[in-house]
Each structure stands twice: as structure tokens, then as C-alpha cells.
Length: 187
Length: 171
Image 1 (cartoon, rainbow over the protein chains, first blue to last red):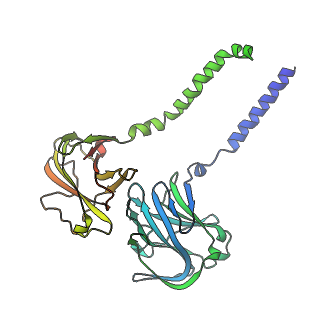
Image 2 (cartoon, rainbow over the protein chains, first blue to last red):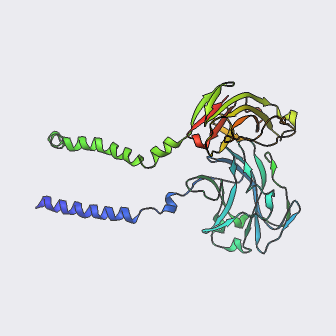
């Protein structure tokens, strides 16, 4: 009788465990999530495909880049970054995540920004990254822990990506800023 | 305990066999095909002729030039690879890819060819893009920009999509 009791208990426990396993199966999005390599402003951050140093970040109401003048109803998130590939030619893709919302880097400045360009091993490129954000971004939830992600393409699944956590509320906001276009070498 | 082991020995032996077997079986659908598709480089000496994808390929010269003499981008040297190509029995369709490979920095890195680097001029006699589908013989010269002083003894990797996973490493 005692043995039967243990068998029933074991059966119930196994059923509960099976339910627990099925209920906690991670989503495909989580299973294929990129591997984030984190660092801070000024750090030389190395992921599997690229080496990145974000030299500075700030906010600006208006930016000038070559002959282009970037106006916005919101505010520009501006970063200056040095990026090189580690193994082979890579594209550069940048987004800012704020409270689950993705803000892609702007392509309005054409090819003068470092995002959207290609980089080769041993040939660092330095240039600006521009992301257009809502005017009230610093008051939004998550503004203290925005994540700047730099990766090799628009599909970062299972890829190694570089991430910096940035407190937008602590950034200086400039009026109009003239930026240096992307150029070879480090800053 | 000994009696318990004795009583269950066949079950325990089965576990020892079945657990590794289950692991191997789980690799069959994805890992083994992935592993089989990985490029398999074949070393070819400078000057040797090798039949690849129905084409006779010979690397005739491989030079690393100081980029400062050619107004190359800052910090770049110029690598010039010259081939003799004889397309004999080509596939109907293939994509040819030529890259420069070097592991001299401790990690294997590769560079794509460039159409122009500084004022280095490819003689008109040479083709500058790889074609493995039109029957005939031609001479090919490709140029690569590499970090100054970091690449001394590179290899050229030639890939024909039709012949994968076999790839050539010429040096």
C-alpha cells in the first residue's frame, strides 16, 4: 500500500513537472535573441563580428552634416562612434531601444553617418550616428536605461551585438550642432 | 546497494548507451548537415595549376605592396593577386568569389577585392572580375586593401558556388 502511495505521488509530481516544462518553453524570439556584449561610453567593446568605441553621446535640436541640415519635430540622439570589423566585411546597423520601443538610426543624412556603412577588419571608421526621438523622450518611461544596440544587420537573431545602456536624462542637449562626416581611422 | 546495482544492471547499461545515442541523434537534422556544408579549403601552391569547378586555375603572382607608394587609403597596403584562368568545362551557373585571407593577427581575417585602390593601375591586359562560366582563357588581376604591415604572407581564397564545400586557398 505504501509503495502504491509513492507511485501515485511520483506520477503526480512527473505530471506537474511536465506541465511546468511546457508552460515555461521560451518563445522563439527569446531562443533566437542576440547575445549582447555590454560596455560604456569610451570603452572598446568587442563582439564576435565588430569592435566598437562610442566616443560620445548627446541630444541636439538640429544637426548639420556636410551640406545637409537635419531639422526635426523631436530631438536628435547623436553618437560619435569608431567601428571596425573583426573577421570580414560587415554592415553597420544601429537602433535605440526605449521601454520596448525600437527607434532605428536615421538614413536622412545619406552616407555621411557611420551606421549603414560597411567596415573591414583593420580599418576602423569614425563617424556620427543619428537617431530621431520624440521631443519628450527624457520624460518617457525607460529614458534612464535606453539601450543603444550596434549590430551587423537588420536581423540580429543569434548574433553577437554590442549594447550600451544610456541614461538619456543625463545627456546634454545642444541647439544646432555641426557634425564631422564618417572618416577613416580612430578619433 | 550492490544488490540494487546487480538487479538493475541491464537498465543502467542501457542508459549509458541510450543517453549518448539520443544526443547524437539530436544532432542529425541540423548539426551534421551544417558541418558537411562548411567550406573545406584545399591548399594550392603559387604556380600550380588546379582543376576546380571545370576551370584550370593558376595563381601566377601574389604581391604585398606598400600602400604609401600608391596613394592608398590611410593605413592600407595593397595586395595584388594575378591568375591565369582557363575555363574548360564550366557549370551552367556559378558565382565566383575571391577573397584575401590572413591569420597573421592570430585570428583568420578576410578582405574583399576592390576595383580601385589609390592610384594603383591594373594593366589593360587583365580582367578584374572573376568569371568561371564563359569557355576560354584569360588573365585575372585583383587588388585588395589590407591594414599596413599586418599582412605579409596572405592566401587567396577562390570559391565557386557550384563546387562548394570545396574551396581553394592559393599562396
